[in-house]
Image (tube, rainbow, N blue to C red):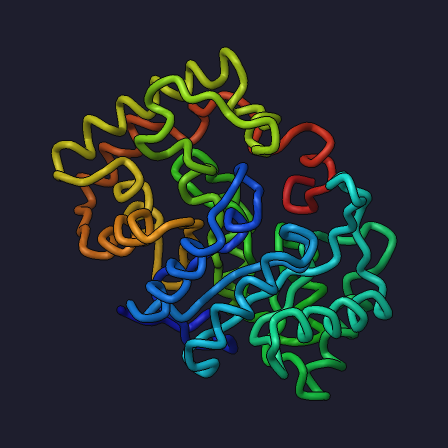
Length: 331
């Protein structure tokens, strides 16, 4: 497994990371035994970056990872944890808490659920509009100084916020959606991150499964699958997006790879400072993901892919309107 450094100040991690959100019900029912098998297989394969959030399954995801890591060497894994999203008992979203007191309280609970004495990268899941980013990052810096956190990351923030945060403490990486059909960061956010020496951990690389063989045919979504409420998976949008995937599938067939592997390879080719975080929920998907590392795309291949699936061709926003309004990265 090749490795790369996150930014100029972050940890060295595997070229691909494992995103664990889907193991805690975000995409419908999940299999806990298979989830732990997948985490073990990822670590055994050399994947060192595991990403979670304290609000994934209301803490379930952290406890799941904690159980899995009891059977592996803690030092082999870089744990990336998002915090601050507030959820009700019915799963509803209630906003974000970036207050310094909230930062430190959330960290204490995460350490307990994960069963570790430090978190490698700690990051606010979103920007709290009521709290200056300097205050939120300053509170995490206090936890770095106390030894509970190793590095500070950010998630879904724009260039101005990146600059303000980096003035308080070095930022290892920005976690943000980046995919063949989600390329909004290319115009401003990505150049700013590179200027500041901040790495990119790219989530949504497969656009929540849209860039795969899964949705090439009719696939009903469970009521508790959050994609059922996502614009890109709705009605006419989904029909149009399926047409894009068929075009991409033809190119994937030429390379003898899957649609998902081609989509991952495209992101990998955007630069060594970009680490795709892939949400494999079972060992077979993990195996498919890792194989994407062996795909070598020429400049001609990339040009054909981007011509076949232009950046503005996707139908529908990446989140519902209310969630989009909460993204500093979209401001």
